[in-house]
Every structure is written in C-alpha cells, then in structure tokens.
Length: 205
Length: 322
Image (cartoon, rainbow over the protein chains, first blue to last red):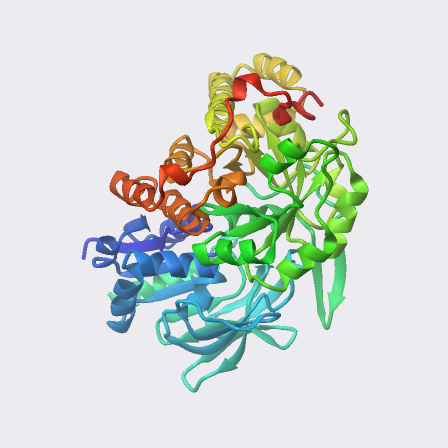
C-alpha cells in the first residue's frame, strides 16, 4: 500500500479547513498519504475515503448531481468506502431531510444514513453556538462543538449508532463506515475527530 | 488557512447562556467568520421578491441578499435608498432554506439593529444604500449577527475587519453591469497584499509599522494579514458581474466567491443566467465548463450596462476614506 488517498468534496463550502485538518491528523498519527480537493467524478474512483464538508447542502447536492459526482460517490460508498459528512455533508448522506420552518424538502441526497434530518434545527445564524459536547462511544470524552445553522437528527434507523447529543438532540451518528456530525470539527484546533476518521479509512485498507 | 479568532475576544455581541446543563456562546468570532466560510465558492444573489429568491435558491445560490430595489434601479431612482421592508425579508425567510442577508445604510446602527432582530443571517453595511455617516461605520463587535462590508483597497478592508466585519466583498461599481471596477478592486487588494507580504518576509518590522500607518489600521492586524498573504476573513467579489465569464474571471483572480446584484434579475434570461453563473463559479478552473455555462445565456438578453467612467454617482466612493 502506498499510503491513503483521502478526498474532500470541493464543490462548495469550507474545503480548505478540512484538507488542513485531515493532513494534520495524518501527520500526528504518522500515517502516510495524500489529501486532495475533489471536484470531478474521475477523481473519485481511486479514493480510500471522502469528507463531505460544511456549506449549503442544496448547492453541493445540486452541483454534484449535475456533474455526475453524486452517482460516483454513491457507488464508492456502496462498495464500502468510509465517508465523513459534516453539517451539509451529514444532510447529503441522509435518507430524508426536512427544514425546521419549511417542512419536507425535495433536494438531491445520497440516501445512505438511515436517519431523518431536520435542517436549521437550532435556528438561524444568530442562534448558532459553541458548546462542549461528548463522544464517549468513540473515545472522545470532550469536544468543542461549533454549530453553525446546524441540522440535527430527528429519527434514526436500526443500524444507526448515536455518538453524541446536545440537549437531547442527536448531533453525531455512525453507521458502519459512515460518520456524520452536525457540528464543525474543522473549525477547531482539536484533531481527534479527523484522526478517528483517518483511522476508519486505514482499517478499511 | 484563515484564522477564525478576532482581535477582540469578548465583545458585546458575544452572548453567554445556559441551555439545560450546557453553557453555550453565541456571536463569537469563530461563529461569525465560520458562517462566512460555509459560503465559500458560492454565489450570493440580490433579490427583491419571494419569486426571485426561489429562482435563486433553485439555481444553486448559496444565499440571497434582500433589497428594496436592485442596485441599477437604486441608481435610476435617485433619492434616498434605505434598508428593505421587514415584511418582505420575513416573507423571503419563510420561502427559502438558504441563508438570508440584507443591507443597511453605512453607519446606520438602528437599521442594523432592526435587521438583527428580524433574524437575517448576515448584515451588509452597504454603499449601495445612502450612507448616514461617512466618517464612522457601525461598530460591528456589538452585534451577534455577522456583518459583511465592501472595500476597494486593502486599508479599507482591514479597517472594516477592525470594526468587526466577519466577511469582505470588494466593491466594484454596483448596478452598472460592468465588471471593470470589480476587477480593478480585487487586483488592487491583491497587489497591496503582495506588498505587505514581501515586507513581512523580509523581516523589516519598521517598514511594516509604516505600512500599518499608511493603511490606517492596527499593527497587529497588518502583521496577521501580511503573514497570511491574504485577507484574514472570507473575501467575495461584487459589483457589475453579469455573465458566467465575469464570475469565473473574478474567481481566477483569487476571490472566495461572488455576489451578483442587478446582473441576473435585470437580464431577460434570469433563470438560466442564475444557473449559468453558479456553474461557472463552481467550475471556474475548467474552461470547457465555463464555456458551457456561457452558452446557457444569450448576450442579447444581458442588461445593457453603463460605462463606469462617466457616472454621476460612484457608489464605491461612499465610506471608503473612513
């Protein structure tokens, strides 16, 4: 094996922060590999793992549908590639999403995580917040959660492992090799969640 | 990478609260600047009605900016341009899921307060509206809602950041359909950034202090900016963008995303044009995709536009010396 090939979907959103966090996580763990921006479907074939970053889920979904990336990502996840969805990325990985105010949504989704998402679950930007949370189940007892117009998970299927809650709302889940958080680890200095994901990718290979 | 911490740690706009057993913070620099980071590589579109906002969302806009009139109509109408009707903003909030921005007049603290209470996601203290205070912009650290400001030079951008702006857009000349000024402004800012970066790299602190004096901004912010070699907040381009090629060119010049004002809804083919500009902004590195995007629009349907040399009103000059 020549090191891991991890991609960050670079259609829209905070791509650079995730590339940086993943590179630093790999350095810390002493794991060899590359981390690249992924814009085109051809780049997806050789990936060992993918991060879908924060941004606007409607924009990332619509544009990756247009250029064929969405289909390619689906195939890769179905074949077992680990994937980490953050905020908008979590929404895209889910089977169902509704908006807190507008109700049911008809937007392109990857349809893997067996959850129902409530978009903008904590309110608008003025209600965005930072809070300490915990992810004991994956060995991260303390984490600084940065929630920006964040979604939450309102229904979970049988195979879903709930990893973290904030005030009774589910904010992090895992289903096999699929990880999703409604908060932004890439906006903090704490690399533990990116390290956890890099290890998931390494185990798979 | 762009840092997320601001100069002022605990501001009036930062609110500490308890929710259940959690102590939380709202309105921090991380949350304000972080919000802007989520918009990167996206297109923000000016809208005046619910219908336009829905077209924008469907086309893949990352956010919409609510105005009473599009900038080119502000130009035509003359008179005083003020913040949009609260009722219209609320209607649009109830109609789309993407974030909503709205403009207030430069220096108008209470228009901004009204927008914060309306719960818009970001406030644009904008030269498109008639300024109420040419010498003092709003002290944005007092707000929980993040602000964006216009700038046409590095000094102007850094002064706005010092006042608490969480995002910058280069000004261009709004409502003209002419991208010339937007191009000039982003190039100006880039050149000035290169200059202070080279001073920083040379290690000549005295020269960097002189640069800070010229820019009329604190040394620490100049030092931070110089070390990064870019603005310390997300920077979009704005003013006169009308076509996919305009948008792609500004992305090529190094901005983080695009604002389109009159260019979409003053064109005859707004729907296709909105989609095309989003495509060109996303895939600006790929000339073939930009061509495909350009093919989606019809030049005969573009807004006519204005020569920026003979304008009676140069919006870009508003508030730029302060």
